[in-house]
Image 1: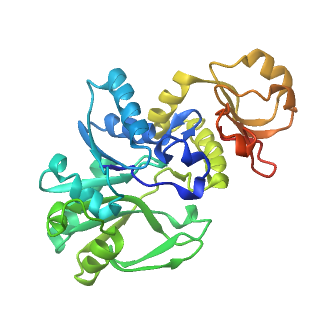
Image 2 (image 1 turned 45 degrees about the horizontal axis):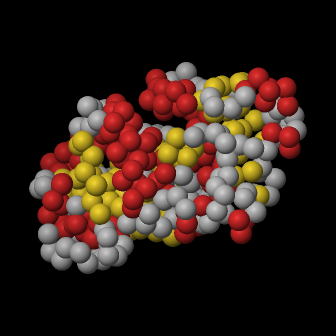
Length: 323
């Protein structure tokens, strides 16, 4: 299940017009990275919950299925009347998820979890004890912003700690036993941490495994900007683990040089004469006359109705973005 219902307030005002899972990185919506990764690993069915700007996510799903629908079935779980929280959203989607277990992934990050390895880890801990929840942790080397630490011993989660730079942290990828959500009333809001995770930690049934996966966040404007460069570095590597993302990016973009990509819809020959810096220029970018050779920039075309932001948002020296 891809969790896609939130408002993305930290990325406003962009998320007032676009749901956060559709905010692009190198011109690709973050949710498309997740779906592509799932397809590449043989996943044939996924649920996506929606609330904020739900219609736009549904339209994206329809378009995605026209292109790749033979490889995956996507069930949209609408939270029409209210945002149901992580636990309430999973409970509401049970009509699609059935019984057994569910893998959840936040759809507003770019990451590439290995599903088979997660299943094996879950089975391993379940054989040793009473595993109801399995967290996938990002290694501490990625925690440069002080995300909340997951305190564990031999894989068993003891506590969700305070933010600490350099500490392993929860990636947002997890496996849950679906029976945990049976006690909740459908259509009501429940918090995933307070109502599910913390009670199960107390029962010693939450475990974790650390993975050296690729993971990048779009939580706020600065992180969204940095994620473009992280993804460029990743796909420019020679590792096979980048192949899935590299394939979808190369369908829509042209690489001018390392860390310099543009949408295939732009006049890249003109851009090469104006710009030798690094970054990404997306479809509809209209600021070519303002480019300088050394700019480090992420730029997209503008929506006409962001007039209060003067049709563009300036992120310090980051350049133009996002729309």
